[in-house]
Image (tube, rainbow, N blue to C red):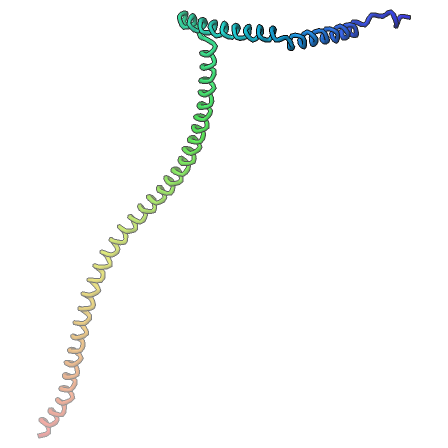
Length: 188
């Protein structure tokens, strides 16, 4: 028994909404077929749109006099802000790319500097070696000159030796002839 007498508010609300929807649809269909209502609603819409347009113009005029922002001003500011944010992001990306480029160039420069230091070190070593070599060349030239002098002296000594040898042979020849002469002189 309690089931038949219980009150269901949702079902009642559902039935009421279906009934109300049907009545509104019938009323709209009735108005849709009424040409006078259509003309009147068209005129009302035109009047309403002209009223809104004049209200908008008056609001903009009053806002400019009172130095207040209008809806268009706020829209423009929002668009400019979005454009500025987009440009800022692009600039940030470019700055990051530039930083990476600068870092890589700094690394390259560091390697070039290190290589340059090595080249300078080698150049200094080559310079000291060149100075040593020049000194050695000068010493070699003086030794060469001395060797030339010694060679010349040796040649003189060889000539002297040959002359001495010839003299010795002459003396020996004379000594060998002298006993014969002395024998001949004493044997006469």
